[in-house]
Image (cartoon, rainbow over all chains, first blue to last red; front, top):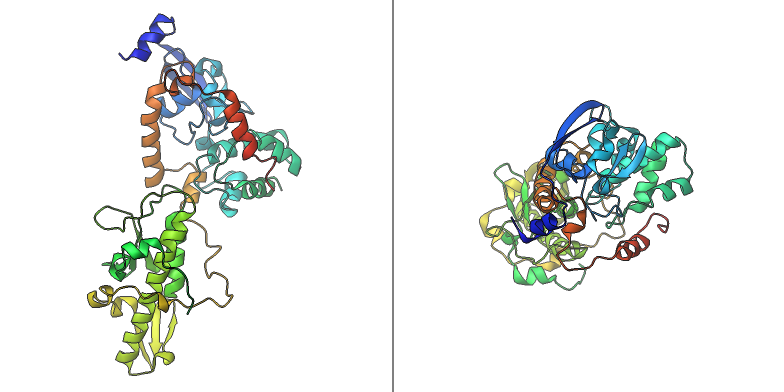
Length: 168
Length: 227
């Protein structure tokens, strides 16, 4: 038990009672035992082993951890796991398959719209939510939606072209 | 012949065999000190080598850097990988090409100018040979002669729009060796935040990480300002 855990204990934030949370993950009913305070991102990656969703800033500000909750894009790093109970979560693993890729995935490959790919799953999920809400967004709509996702490699133009191609 | 300053990597590792040799499968193996950390540098370097060899990219195998095998090129970061390793490999490949061309000309009994090279195959007077037929240890022991590099004469890169092979697995969330190793690394990082209600615990204790920092980062590299 490190110093940090002792701090949490003193603050009354350390709760050892695990609970079960049920939700739909990529179309499948899922029940997972969680510690109170776990985030959706933590559960996706470390409990369920779905590693396409990335931890970036951990503050809900870079967009790398974006998934779809229902039909909306949310940052999973600051979404408490309890908040998804009874709802539907979609990660990149559930967006499309190699045999039947989502139009966005096809377009991202065709446009080679990534360099390192760390932000890519978040961008894809944010764009997928945009296309659900508006199948034919304008250039300005695409830019406005993706404003919530950062890319350090600088492939912005390719990403914009890929989303536009997928929406066409 | 074009005059350009020799890359620093080449000064430290001047021998041809320190950059290129032949694999057991007959492909040309290229050694680099720049690690593919997902940024695609091995793809870029393969194209540079294949271009100079006048060979298909599949005929070039990029050896994953290792301490015992590869030139020590310091850190891997930013666009210096092309400047350092790319420039060195380009000169090495040009040297290998011209050394093989000269050897083939002697074997075929023709002038060097009569040797045609395409798709990694040398041809002259009805004879043919590949790099695998021509390269030997003696050739690889030579110091790299930067004078072998020929200008492109304005010709664009032969493989400039060739797709990277690793992008599909990243976009489709299917596992490959690189994504598996990434997820392992990140799982160990995340272990420290597990079970805490706020990821602010990823900061060192006592340090400050104001939200305005992330806001500034957002404004410097954003989709709204991309042009």
